[in-house]
Image (tube, rainbow, N blue to C red; front, side, top):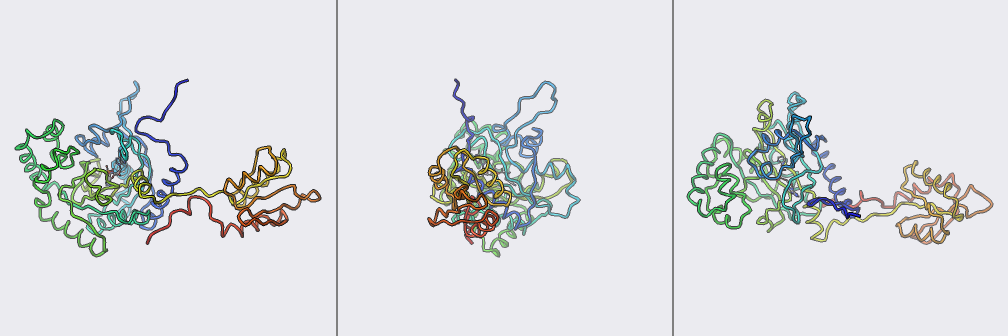
Length: 438
Ligand code: HAM
């Protein structure tokens, strides 16, 4: 037999880990609702051109990491798995004419993204993002709202120490001149550049600033800074974003070489890091303004801003710090019985309890009552409902409180009400696990 494995760079999320993701997804959905961001879904794959145009043909994400789907003979269109959500969401905004909705249109999406990256800890070929976009507002106040929302996610997820790194990368008015200065600077150092970086110098000099090559660090540190090259309008916007963040009491650090890895950004750019982890290129999340993207994908000129948070890296950070474990609590009640073979009766009663909205299960193995009770305790059930204990009456069951070690006889007609009362004090399911830090 072949031994099958999950593809390289992908992972199975078994229940203990899936519960952690689920808790973060619930927090994300709760925050999105609190801040007025509406859920959207887009396909897991799009026309390759959506990413080539949107994210940028010379960005690493498209040039090296795009999961291109092998074309079928009858297809004339090229498809690729989505490496991120923004391009697809903006494609949907244009396709469905959302510019006629009240602006900004505030959207959110959680789901898997795909990048053909070299797998390592915190870097996968399939990973999960929580993405938030506000399309149709030029800022600067919405920029601060978005940055603060991302930070609040980390606070409430149990990572209050996460920091915001902030920069402005200009716009088509001022960036071309800056990119030329950057090209000239790195051209003077061409002999010191690794092969890949020399290629980038030709195609996309800005990308040199987020090079992962250690030899590039001192060159990048001494390179001209984009913040010094901003036009008046971009400089004013950046100053106003900072004023708004300060008004909100959001701490941030200016990161002069932060340029982000995707080509659609203009002006505001930011990333979230655990303190001291910036050097490892392992941001927990990042985002920025993309005032040219809607037009690039065929819409009217429309500003936009958003971020994506990496749920895998957030789960990893929480686990490393020994936080955020989500325990599976058992069912409220397990229906067990004196007669091992009477599975139909146990299943029927559990079904009745579930229909009444109570988390219940039935012991469906044909084993002795003592074994069934052991199983119920192992499953973490608060109660065992024992059927068939009273030979003279089918109208009663024994309700055993497994936590308190007490039991009493209850009319079947009263069982739902009894359990409902108990359920109010019983904690069950992973939903209970995220304790907000406010
Ligand atoms: P990004 O910086 O490419 O931005 O990705 C956002 C986050 O996704 C990263 O900070 C990281 O946590 C996670 N991530 C990225 N690649 C991987 C990977 N291979 N394995 C695990 N996690 C990963 C974007 O995707 C933009 N669409 C964000 C945005 C939204 N900008 C504006 N709106």
